[in-house]
Structures are given as C-alpha cells and as structure tokens.
Amino acid sequence: MSDAITLNGVTKTFGTKVAVRDLDLVVPTGAIYGFIGPNGAGKTTTIRMIMSILFPDCGQISVLGHESALEAKDRIGYLPEERGLYKKMKVGAFLMYMERLKRDSGTSSRSRVRGWLEKVGLADVENKKCEELSKGMQQKIQFIATVIHEPELLILDEPFSGLDPVNMRLLRDLVLEQGRKGSTVIFSTHVMDQAEQICDHIVMINDGDKVLDDNLDDIRRRFDPRTILFESLEIGADVTPLESLPSVEGITRKGAHHEISLKAGSDPGQAIREIVNAAPASRVELHRPTLEDIFVQIVTEGGTAGVDLDNLRAGLRNDAAAGGAS
Image 1: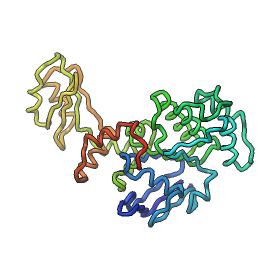
Image 2 (image 1 turned 90 degrees about the vertical axis):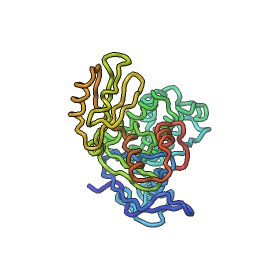
Image 3 (image 1 turned 135 degrees about the vertical axis):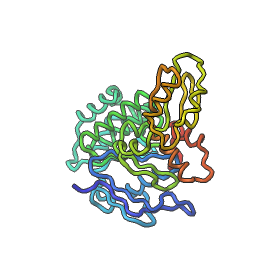
Image 4 (image 1 turned 120 degrees about the vertical axis):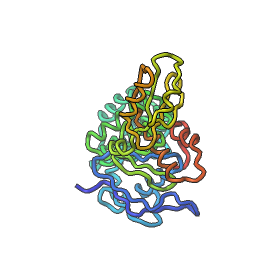
C-alpha cells in the first residue's frame, strides 16, 4: 500500500522569511499524524502546500499517489484554519450540497446528513440558516462538511480552536472514529495535549524546521523522565535534606507538592528510593515529560537564540490565541 503523503526537500519562502525549510515527510496510509508547534512555526504553510493552495519554491509533494492534491480532491476532506460557510443557506441544504460536490454518484443522502447532525447534537438545526448558529455550532457543521463524503485523507488545520471543553472532546472522538474507519488523518495544533490524546505520530515544527518526527510512544521512551513529584507526609515539612541527595539537581515547590529535578544520567528508580528514605512521603511519583516539555527542551537544547520560554509555553497552551500565521 502506497503512502498517503510524501514531501521531499520542500521549501517555501515569503520574501526573506523562510516559512518551511527543506522538509522531508512520509505519512503512511491509515496513520494519524499531528503537526505541532507554536503559531507561526510553518504548520499551516505545510498544509497549504500539501493541498496545492500554495506551491513550494523547491521540492516534490505527492498526495494519494498524485503530484497534486487537485488530482485527488474528491478523496480528501480539508478543514482550513479560516472557517467559512454559505451563511444564507439552510444547514441541511448546505451539507447535502457539500456532499454532492465530492461524491461521484451526484446524489446525496438526507438520512446521512440527519445522522451526522444527531451525532454532534444538532438534530434541530437542519432547517436553520447557517448564519443563525453560534460559532461553536458552525464549527461542528464545517467538520461534518469535511467528512460527510467519507474521505480517504482528512486534513484539519487547528480544528479545536475556539471550542469549549465538551465540544472539544466530541470533535476529538469523531476524529479518532475517522481513523478507526481507515482514513489517514493529519491535523495541526499548537496545543500539545490535544496531539497527545489523538495522534500515534508527531511531527514537531519550529521556525520552519522539522525538529522531531517520530511515533508518540518512541518519543516518550527517548525523552527520559527527569522530574519526580514529591508530597510530604506532613504539611509544611522541611524538604531541604533532599537537596543533598546525589541524584537531585534542584527542588521547586508547586502548590501542595514539590517537583524534584534529577541530574543527567540519574536512575529515576534509585532516586525515588533515596527520596523515600530521606523524607516521609504521602506521594512520590515519576513525572513523565509532556509534549510541551519535550518541545521546549528541543528548542532550548537546539540553541534557538533569544527564545522566551515563558511566552513559548503560554503560546503552546493558549488555544484562544489561534488564528495567527502558522
């Protein structure tokens, strides 16, 4: 079975700005890939090149076995970062129209539209105009329009931006459902925990460069946990004895617990035993690095000049800030 997407040596510039630099990428058929990184990293530019909305300065792109996504457009579902509906159309008519655009048969199924509306909790909006819906409702309608023709390849650019936690979880489950059905899924996000919940493969992009491209489980194994969460058995107990332990690099108070940073090369298991022997504890556990931690570590160790880590972390967490060039 051929790969769904391949990029070889793809570069895209805008004036003096290099948006994507010499990018190689292979997305196997049936995989769920996450493009992650802060706003402005190059995620959306990459997606637009895959979709033949933008064209690379150099390099080759293959989509579903074709040199251009335009040759396979009916097999692709694309939810762009910029949302848009035919506002004056009624919801049901809009979705049936979007399905007819993609299906070879030229027919659509009202029952399929109604089934999708029920699935997303909008069974009562079929005869409402799109402009009458809330922003969150419109976003769910756009997702239905993206998948209603059952695409082989699903590309979602910041699909969770602006959604409340309930609808974010609903959309996440629907994306996973598409993956279970065999669709290849690519979605971009600057909110790392979304990628951890959905993807089986992560591509990290920073300042136009691919800095990581690996299976999620392998990423977690490669970046060894270096932090132990410690909660004292007695509230307010003195933890300074822990600072002298041979494996401890530093201790930071975090509310009711402390985060103990380990020295490079330390054995976490041995460190936990030393900590328990040195101070009575109600909780001692290994804190595995999140994708956010890993990304910040890569950026820091890569020597990115002038990086503001506080702003970087805030940008990776703040979904409300989505919408800038990326």
